[in-house]
Length: 169
Length: 245
Ligand SMILES: Nc1ncnc2c1ncn2[C@@H]1O[C@H](COP(=O)(O)OP(=O)(O)OP(=O)(O)O)[C@@H](O)[C@H]1O
Ligand SMILES: [Mg+2]
Image (cartoon, rainbow over all chains, first blue to last red; front, side, top):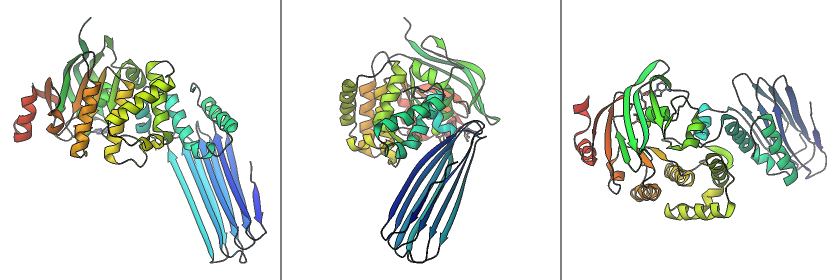
């Protein structure tokens, strides 16, 4: 469990959170992020992704509180989850506590499952089922991995391939 | 060495308990271009999917032989690596995977060895010029936000790069403007040689004008009811399918 938190106390303070979690069999990953806007012109960006497979469960909790004094603040939260099969679970629990009108706030949550059609398409191009899934997951994670220093991005792709056994490259 | 590439015998296929194909026979030799025409819902896309053994379609009876192997129950990726390619009527979108990376990866898998980067880039550039494709699209996510026509050209590009022995083109010409149809037939001509074959599924005889078509098959209600030469396509264009129903 991991719940980092930012409190934006100074005028114009900014925070950005990017995270990805991968829940496999028997795992229940409960993550989230909290941000409190407590001054004028503050901004926060949250970009969270989760992947679950083999009955794994990902829960994502986000809390965004924008205080009355935090005029002209901005917050954008995006949570996207991908399930690799029918037995995996994904849940997003957003709490938005906004106490002033003068803000720009957006929250986007998307939950998707890898489709059999997409797998068939990739297999018809010579990819095994595992390769196909790993490619879809790497693509899903790409908006995050491209923000990482290259060594970490490589490591992350290796982890994805490892999680999805049999996929190399 | 036999010239035969594909032989389908007495193929019966079901999906969700619906009987779709009711005894398909089809033989394709190296060097040939075949065309399947038929009314909407007659089983054309199902035939293509059954050849590539899409698990959604259940084979009740019959067999498919390709390049000397009985591939009836092979996995889709094994069939692809053996040399069958299908251009999809509705290509899938893969966010976060660029066209270039996808092609490189697929080519690795199909050929079973790592692609040589410079050769690959040159090859890609050549094909893209021939197909009048925007090089900027190569770094975009595969098919994501591509127009209908761009997706279809992308399928032809994949065919050229993967260089299969048999290319099945499922309505690759649908929804294309006149110039794009010409471009696609140019792509087919560029691909075609004496050792491979093309199976074109279409509703439109325009794409056939510049190609040397060997056989036209009419598929109605899960069966091939007539086979002829290019004139059969013309006849259907004029008279429709009424007489075959
Ligand atoms: N997965 C499926 N489950 C149930 N029925 C299906 C499935 N796929 C296709 N069918 C049905 O099988 C029949 C043949 O479909 P198919 O897509 O092969 O037609 P087609 O000849 O390609 O038509 P079109 O010219 O419209 O593309 C249709 O009646 C269709 O509804
Ligand atoms: Mg069809």
